Image 1 (cartoon, rainbow, N blue to C red):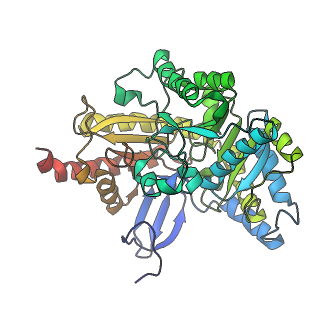
Image 2: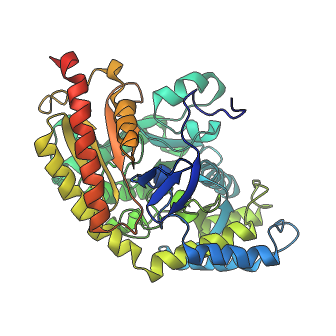
Image 3: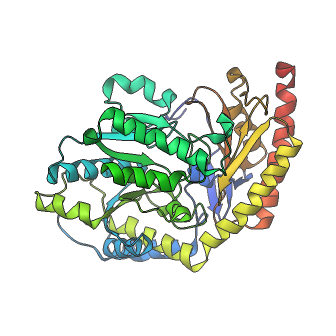
Length: 443
């Protein structure tokens, strides 16, 4: 018996210890963390420099409420993050996780509108599918029906535009016309809603769990920025998964030299050592809000000194060990190896990603883009098979959470070619077993 419960009734082995890319249960079985947990543990497990920084901070203080004290750790981390952002993003607001960061970004955008006489702007456009968090506010901009449908009566759902899934629509992702095709859907939606009512557009630079490492087509991101500027719409980048080096640059936005108005981060920023997230904002948005009476928002653990000390040490590790560059190099190798698996296993219909945010998608017919039958629960069954073999990967369903299956392969940024060999061998054996299991049902 356990007094704990989470999403379901399933039980897992008890974790004993974790080092680098490996984790051990209390029976001594070793697992390779091929998904960095939930794309969180960017620098690997139990990094000694981070643990030492946490010990030093714990010996000084573990909590200082932001209305009572400023702390050295939070000031240093804020300065470091501002230095890693596009130059206009200079103001930092700390939170404890991704959902909190997204909520903070939307509320900052709204309060700026109120402070600058634009009170008619309140709609935050997002993409379908997308995932931006599990709180009711974050779910309101999440395009993932399996998660939003149960709670829709409790929310004010926001407008959406199609995600740029060129591969499913049979379009060339390397053609700028494709990128403009999807971006122009945003402008059309803004006009339909009334530009004076649209507050912001929120998106992940590279799609996360809902779209499985979806890289935008050429021309898309640049056109998005132009459209937002044309209509006075703020651009919020959800870098919860893509930030902290995951895609091969510190921010995913750097791949397109994109200039966001607000960036929200978490996951790899705390890297699994502490609950930590951040909203980083253009100063031109913050000052009017503060002048109007202050940001009406906050969390008890915002700027917690222990969390910030750990986060600062994580950023140090990312920079000092060249992990952004390693993610880019190893990511290119991993994508190539996944394409090799695609050549061998017909049920893989697509491979995609950037840096060490990669995925492959199952299809029963690669040419027709037909997903596997939903009753196979392929996304869960494959993960279970790999787990039994000591390989941890992550999965979601591609079509709004109800059908389609993709597997995310996102090891820590410290991964080496030897680690990738082990991951690919585990995937290959798991694919053999999975394909044999489902063959009778596909015949």
